Length: 61
Image (cartoon, rainbow, N blue to C red; front, top):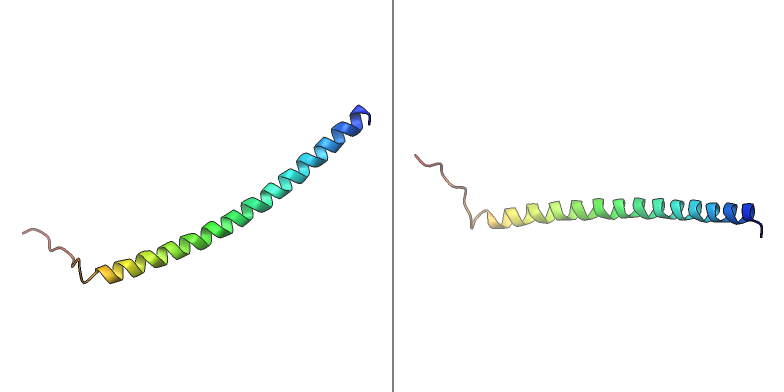
């Protein structure tokens, strides 16, 4: 394999790795978005459950 073919082969490998990484990033963004929605939902449920235990405080007079 001559030097030019070797360089082109390595460039192809780098491009393939970049595409794979971009796909992984898109997948992670989707997972993070799902987790964020779930966390916000759990926060709302927890707040609703704790409301009777921790009534809002009245401002000091």
